[in-house]
Length: 166
Image 1 (cartoon, helix red, strand yellow):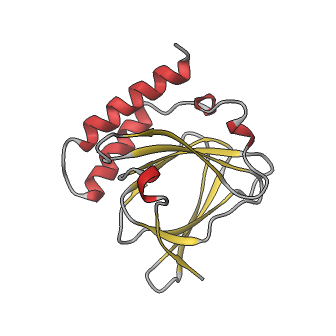
Image 2 (tube, rainbow, N blue to C red; image 1 turned 90 degrees about the horizontal axis):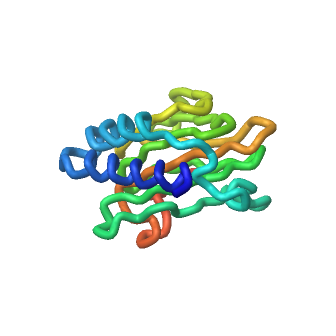
Image 3 (tube, rainbow, N blue to C red; image 1 turned 135 degrees about the vertical axis):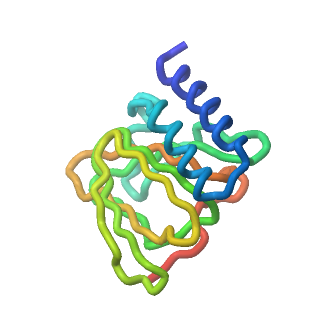
């Protein structure tokens, strides 16, 4: 088995264990974030073709969807200049940066800016609604790759975003 496959298998098992604790969303995000820190793979978790990204938008690659819908793991590839709209989420989310730097802007319920942070490789953060309004950008000159773990099966619901804001 390749290192990426072993890492994904280990990560899935660790996330499954954290989710099985059956606590609230914020605590679950914290538990999953701890597991992602302990099992954070490198960008090679994605194939070379996947790591190229897409010129027109952020590229998402489903790496695992738990059969019961409890969580899913996606690899996201951000070419320089790519961004999300300001949005919030339908469930808890944990993000780990594998390469590049993701610039994140945080907002309150009235869409007032409340913080910014640059997330370098190795940075892991987790959050849960409410209080999860943000926008992510790749403001660097190199492609950024991150792993996103959502508390739902993204392949079934289509998107982690609950609302988009102007």
